[in-house]
Image (cartoon, rainbow over all chains, first blue to last red; front, side):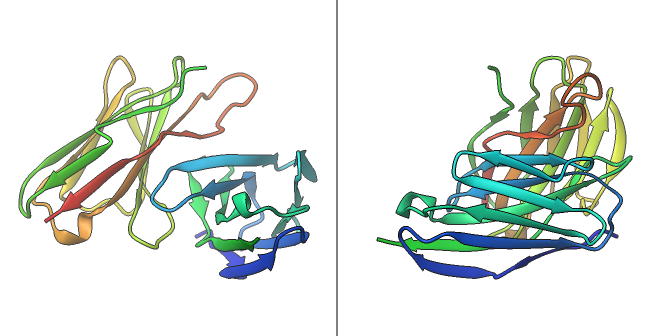
Length: 112
Length: 115
């Protein structure tokens, strides 16, 4: 059974800092990996999708990398802003069964 | 672009009542997934349907049932509601064909509160 772990569980940084969120998964036979953002009590906003054949994806100040063989992904946020404060969830999709398995998330607070 | 539509957005029920959530996938998407996210928890996979047939089953309680209809919309039926069923319920859809195949797109969720 796939298990997804996110470290740290919570992170507080001053505005303007660059930061890295970590995600690890136990079964490397994945189809894709997605990073989501979730504001309190709200829905899931997809940030970046990395297919299993890809190494990284970039969108604006966000960069996600994937090392499938080691079962790791990182989400890099450059020049953090207070508006980036949210919970960031990592989720992996299995090959053949495409439903997503989520990590418990990293709660990010960016202090002005 | 059309997104995944969920209704109702909010629902309040009493214990032991029944609730039904609806999900309308993105047009031409053939697969629907249901997730449950309790307070402070990560989303947990409940069940999925492909071409109106159940394709995968997760941690769905026996009190819950779901189906996908001929127009591809799906309904999640929850009976004998318990306080612990209070959660945000997400529906996602995907297409098994073309570019972006099997990439899930999520709806905004339905918040169920059981009193």
